[in-house]
Structure formats: C-alpha cells, structure tokens
Length: 198
Image 1 (cartoon, rainbow, N blue to C red):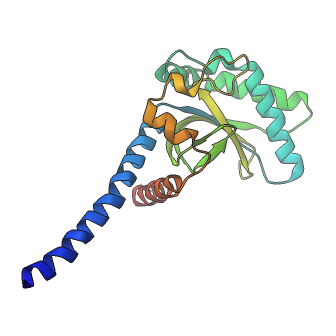
Image 2 (cartoon, rainbow, N blue to C red; image 1 turned 90 degrees about the vertical axis):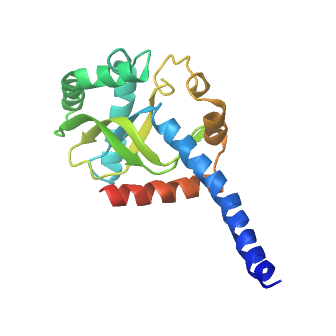
C-alpha cells in the first residue's frame, strides 16, 4: 500500500513530463532540420533613422533585382558557395549603387551562420535557430534589419520555387503555422543554446 502511494504520483509525474517534453523535442528537431535547409539574405541598416531605413529598403530592392544569378543555386550548398565566391562582386555592386545615389556608406558582405529569432514571413513562419545567411551590413550595421529567403528562392524575382519543394511534411507543418506556442519553446531552447556556446 505504501509503495502504491509513492509510486503512483511519481509515475504520473513521469508520464506528464514525458507528454510535455516529447512534442518539445520533436519541435526542436524539426526546427533544426529547417535551419539546415534554408539560406537567408540579411541586410542591416546603418541605424534606425528614417533615412537609413529607407536606404536599407532601397538597397534590398537593388540586391534582389540584380544578384539572383550570383546568389542562387539548385541546391543549398550551391547557393551558399555561389554567395561565398561572389562576396567581392556583391560588395562592389552595393557600394557602386549607393555611390550612384550620392550616399557615402560602404557595405560589408559575408556569408555567415547566425542566430535568428522566430520570424514571420508572409504566409509562413521560420522558427528560431542558426541559419546560413548572406549578411550585408550598411555602414555601422546597427539599425533594424530586413531578411528573406534566397534558398529556396522564395524572395528572388521570377521565383517559381516553394518551401514545400525542400522541406518535409513535419517541417512544412511547423512553418505553415502563423505562430504557435511551439515557436516560443523552440526560441527559448535555441536562445539558451546560443548563450551557452557564445
């Protein structure tokens, strides 16, 4: 009798913890799968002033219209490699464009793996995590940023690709949610992991 009084609460606690952690573990695993299949374009403004934010959006339009041949690819690895091989060309293009508009800013262009919080993008949401990205910093790069997905080429002009062409069913189910508690759990997990590593 004493054993049952002790065993039942412990067993019920274990079942409850298992019931809560299993979906969390599955969501984290799915989100990490997504972050390993996506290549992002990340543009940071010089500052948060209206002028600098407008320059960021102007440069974003220019980059999307003029670089799809040098940052695209048929596979994720090819897209990343193309971007790495063309960072100087992208830098020169951006600097020349800004100069043609009478702006003194210079850009820094790098292909990096960086942490992003959960972000809503038009009709889907990307969970928090570390993503490969082509990072373009304008001037000091201290202003609000703009980002999109260049592989799959969701944000490039004349795009015919869809996220569903590259993500499995579980991953598509997760990103198709506009926002759910799973995203907060994944973001908390990824944030803690990032702090421990950094």
